[in-house]
Length: 229
Image (cartoon, rainbow, N blue to C red; front, side):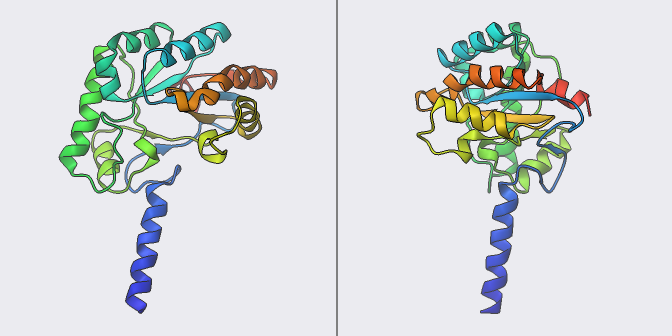
């Protein structure tokens, strides 16, 4: 019985580590920037996808705000013109794996392929700066962080995530209010806007920007955020 309890505690502990947004066993992981600077980074996961990426790019352009797009390699391959549109708008591209698979219990070769293929597509789009990595579903344990550490790639998570904190039926206003309330200096906000099921999160983007502007926040890319550390 004692052994079973120990095994249970180990498994439970590893599960908590696998989904932690501020700890991993190897390499550098960042969930927010400097708490002394009144800046915030809006980040958009998945995609780029026709219609949805174009809509959010239009919203950002109208508000003169920069964002960071953590892209999935398969979607970059399907819509290479959208990655160029992201960069033309002055935004940043990040790596969100090639197939958006959970990176738990994966082989080293699988992990390397997922990251390397996507990095090549990001470079092909014309992005020349440092490429940050965001693990799909935020999941990581041993193999993924070890590979990232060996390649000198920084993991970027978040400290504000309305999608996990609020019920699926939350309105755009509720989503925006939550983000505005939770943001601190240096926050990294996770937003999912690339699917029809996330239409309220997409609709919340202008409200989030307007609310944070009223609080005198400056919007920056992840790269700009981390340069202030």
